[in-house]
Length: 337
Ligand code: NAD
Ligand code: WQD
Image (cartoon, rainbow, N blue to C red; front, side):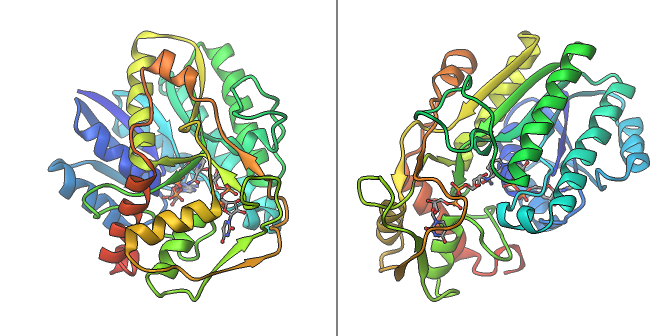
């Protein structure tokens, strides 16, 4: 069995990736400091998969603790690096926290990989590195021009990895996720934000009566219905892209960069309408001002991932919103329900 180390292993996307990896011939070692997650997510991954994982509560900022993990797990084949702070607004208010956690955390990880001879890594990047692209659907050759500290950390983490890959002969897959949404079909794992920064978790909480209404950030954008358009991707499809990336690195050396999205955009109003159909009642909303830093529309061209990874998103909008509602309604207080 190949041993995979997942940083941020208790988080939203990692928990779904764990489930997909555990269907295959992989042994998982997870590290997380629980700054945005909890152990219950890992317990439920074990429940869904019927398998156990090895877990270390370690902060990537703690290089000695990280060193010990690599020493105790000498046969790590590949790393999937999810751990990061990810809230755009918070990153504008606390840039030093973001640069410190995301950049220093990554540097520590890469140093330990080098020290312990681990040379394969899948990295969680984001469509945020493209900022407001000149044309859509954006492909992987588009200019990198992030517009906020969080996005800058992702662009820097990519660059550090590219330079290291070249110098150290590493094999790297950089996955630029578009807008991950939804949950595992069991309804046992999902996104559990204390305060939702993204559209769909907010809509879910309004649908559940936890919040009063959704504020639509502007209806005067140059889009068909005036609201922002994004490329939403089901988290289970996204999780499977990681499995395909691990398989890819096993036989294709070098650096690979992929957009992971569907290529299809939906507006804010389309998302709310789809959610209403899933939950069976209306979701109150009001149109407010544009959110600073927002863009009208972004979708990704996923054809490179299809051609080279053999990966293509399978799950449609109704699966995204139905699974999000199932998770929300079965776990009204998230993992502490
Ligand atoms: P998440 O917050 O659920 O998962 C990140 C995990 O990393 C959390 O469990 C957190 O506790 C952990 N973590 C953070 N800093 C750490 C540190 N210093 N040491 C150890 N653990 C640490 O977020 P997610 O949505 O699952 O995102 C996973 C990755 O995907 C992140 O790198 C994020 O930037 C990236 N990404 C997310 C989205 C999205 O919309 N969710 C989109 C594009 C990219
Ligand atoms: C989607 C659409 C909003 C909330 C962010 C990060 C990006 C990536 C994914 C990590 C936009 C509108 C939202 C609300 C609204 N994360 N909206 N009311 O901004 O595309 O991307 O998450 O890498 O880096 O920037 O996602 O879910 O915040 O917004 O009208 O309460 O919903 O204006 O059009 P975004 P989002």
